[in-house]
Length: 245
Image (cartoon, rainbow, N blue to C red; front, side, top):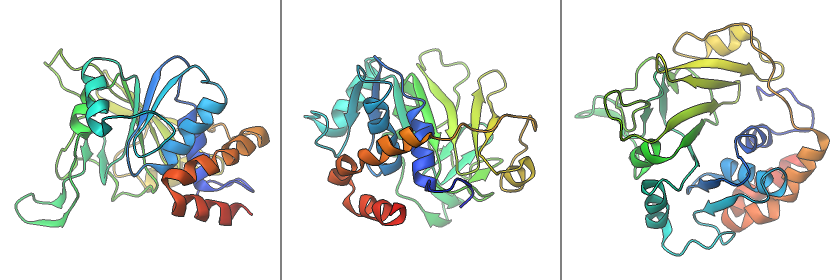
């Protein structure tokens, strides 16, 4: 595990970093197939964002009456402040690939597709990207196919886009000027050389602080959310319980 913290799993560490991106009084949404962001949002709600509004698809924790349609409606009306996304490929410019690996007409791998990710990437005020693995296969110079674009020069109607990217090795920050990722922090025990070796595009700057680790109190509060997490992701929650015993 790249995160070198005794007693803390990689998933808990990533969930804590995602929790730190949640702000009180804002509306945060978590999509389906996203147990780590859900754990982070549950932690935020229980700690520093008690007055925030939360929309968790696939969970009975929030009153979602119209599924993803309700989520898309909120985003298009400018009422969604934060959403979490990932991709099979994420490139230097913040583009996401959820469509295929290789040429579109004859792909090596056909992926599930973007669903509503492109619209949410454009219409949500802040999008935090996450990845559960960090390698040159994921972080590429240029996506094989752009499912969702990191920026849209010349299109003033775009409301938001990427702000942060959390991986098992580091946190990156999106610089809207050049439209590229900049290294923001390195996780405990991860040297710059390792992060650069596992990234398919240049990282800068090399001199960045260490990513804050969860305190014992934060870790305890994260684990207190596992029963709620289990309602949506029972197998993931059980796996997490097994590894922290």
